[in-house]
Image (cartoon, rainbow, N blue to C red; front, side, top):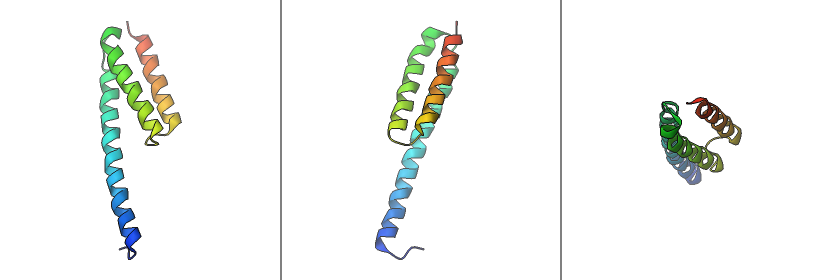
Length: 84
């Protein structure tokens, strides 16, 4: 157990941000699953744009690495372009 006041506070803060980041990543996973589940372009377009927006926001906040976000966006657009 930590003894310094600042260390104890830092542990609390880290736990809060860990839970916050975990929650955001969970929303992202749901958005990606929803986008990949779309059957046609009309149905998938709003879902893909929502997922793109979330990926950009999480990369900007350093919750996701920018290259990871770019790879996910590339994968998603490849999928969308293959839809009829």
